[in-house]
Each structure stands twice: as C-alpha cells, then as structure tokens.
Length: 246
Image 1 (cartoon, rainbow, N blue to C red):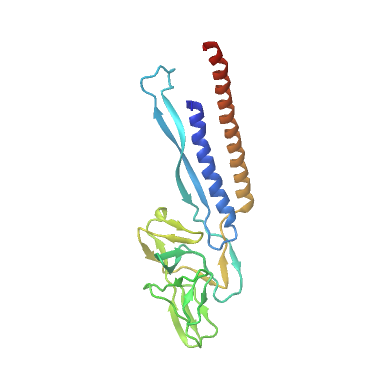
Image 2 (image 1 turned 90 degrees about the vertical axis):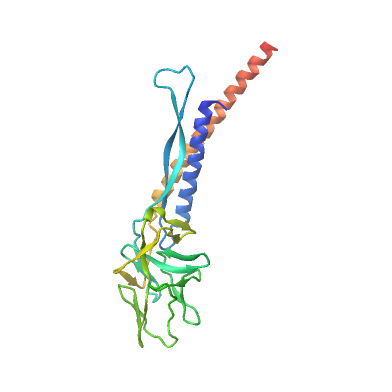
C-alpha cells in the first residue's frame, strides 16, 4: 500500500471507531443515567528520514484514535412517581456491589428483593456510606428518601445511601451502559441532592447524535472510495507497464 492509501486507511479506522461510539450513544439514549462518549483524534507524526522531499514535507501525519472521553453533564429529570426511583441532581454516583466489586452508577432504578435488600435493575446490591447493603424492613410503609440520601419509614430511619465522587473522573472505566469503575478511589458526597420518584435521563440528544453518525458515515464512505480508486489506479498502471517490459 502506498503512502497516500496508508494515511487514508488510518482515517478509515478512526472513522469506524467514531461511528461505533455514536451508535452506542444512540442505543443508550433511553438508558437512565447513561453518559455519552466522544472520540478524541490526534495526529501520529512519522518523520521521513533519508528521503528527498520538498521543503516542509519531511513529516507525514497519520490519524489515530487517541482516547475516548465521557461527557459528565447531567441529564434531564424524568418524574416517574415510583417510590424506589431515585435521581441525583448534584455531582456524585450511587454505589452498588457487583461480582467484580464496588461500582458507581447514576442509574437510580432501585427496588427491594423479597428479603428487603435494596438492589438496582440488574440485581446489584445498593450500598450505604460504609459499603454495607441497605435492607428495607418488611413492615415498612411510606418509604421516604431525603435529599442527603437518608431512608426513613413508618418505623423511623432505615439507613443512608452511599453517594461518592471519583477522585479522578478522567480515570473512570465504563463497564456496560451504566456501571463505572473508579480505580483511583472515591470521596463521599455530603449533599447529593437526591430526588425521590424520578430518574436522570441519558444526556444523549438523539437528533444531534444521529446527525453526527451520518456525517461520520459519509466521511467513511468517501475515504473508502478514495482507497479503492487509488488501488484501481495503481493496478491499471501495473497492467499497462507489464506488457511493455515483458
């Protein structure tokens, strides 16, 4: 493959990644607490040594998928009226216990198991500030959740939700659509601003995301056509030269 095609191919790989990210954002547009992602592109510079090139042409810039960053802007609130639906209006994440350890989430679709253990929509146990499971007593009625995460019922206080912020948000690692791992540790949030009977919607704007994905698809198609045309041009030149030298 010649240099021009190699540069175009590097952009093709990057555009494919961008389309994959946009498609994932669209697929989770209705997932509570989901945060959209973006691809960060950068130049990968190749120094051309020992070649006779015009002035300023000693460097070739390839495209590389440098990183993926997560938009942490909060989504809109959707009021459901469900007692166990909870939304965070400030910075922070609920903590849940999974098979891989403690994870963070903004998805507040909670509910009790038959034994009263509070879990998320995937069955992961919701934790208190001490990392212990929260259990709702069987005779509890009129459960209320205060803005600081304190749970109360007709028998009095029940417990408190563990809400934390990651020490380094840039190091958050996604595990599925709504779970995040914080390898650098977390810090408790004193005033998370929890709203009962509501859910935080995904911060994805479907129309804008679809427009972005269509633009990425057009770029991908153009680059594919360019690589194919360049390949056809080279093959045509070879076909014409071979008989003359044969």
